[in-house]
Length: 426
Image (tube, rainbow, N blue to C red; front, top):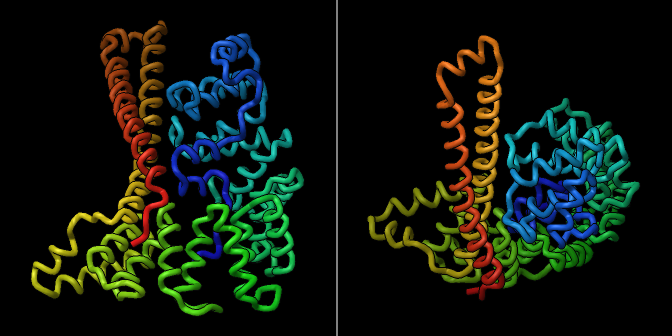
């Protein structure tokens, strides 16, 4: 059951389709003619920081141009060099998450600091997240909370939700459920589905209020209507176990399908369990195995344990039992979950290739620059020629070619995923 869902701006989006991830990874682009690429480029080239940021957004999000982090990066840099806070924040996002550059928490923190010092709410949130999770800095919950409050003062719903989480868990003192509920309600009023999910959990547990499963379920429904996969999984869990409601396996399975369709590993594991033990359906070894594998692939420990145990059970029988269960799945819901898994894997690989290509070009630049110097290093470079730089350039080109191929696969997979998002339930 998912009850400590976090609304971290740049980590939670990895559970969403890649197109949604790109949209959530940064603030909206400025309105200054960003649909007119030529006009925007002219303004950006002339030194307009806002236009430079907007142009970077087009490349980062792939709007009107081929999506290309390495093309976005120099425009963000030029904008950030003029102390434009949104661009500074976006560079922090890119260094934190390996978007077109090698992951570098220290540099991410530095960019977040620059934008945060200007009062930029998203940067305050992102810097607080780094402090909370000890990324590039020593963990400091109190400083993180102070920054989350600054962002919340600007009505950033994610910050409001995280403050509630801090009070729920007692990161800066004893847990204070009343304050947690207050902050969750504030975030929920601003449309934050993770806060709605948390309010559901706290009502179900009776934390800071009388235990009330009907109130819990109503909050879960609100979050689920907003597409929150954790809430969908929680509703499934309630019906699977009869927590405050009559046990209803068909309802449970329906909600688990919704959550699993968004890549929720807990729901995938629960579906494996239901097919293994025939909860509301005929036992199906193949479907159970496929769902456990999907959960385990995401690192879900229950899924890993169940996959290991179920595999051992199946292999106790003759080979035909294992072979039958190990067939490639044809269930539409399983295929949709596999597409979500494929999307995540493609995103990870594309980011790695883009960052590696940028590094290869940097190495080539350094070698070529050394060759222009009239010193010992320059003489060495001239002695060996430009072979080293060329090798780096070739490697960068290969990385970008592979990245482009994978981007095509990603678009195709996302299109298939969106088309199949509401697969019929068995």
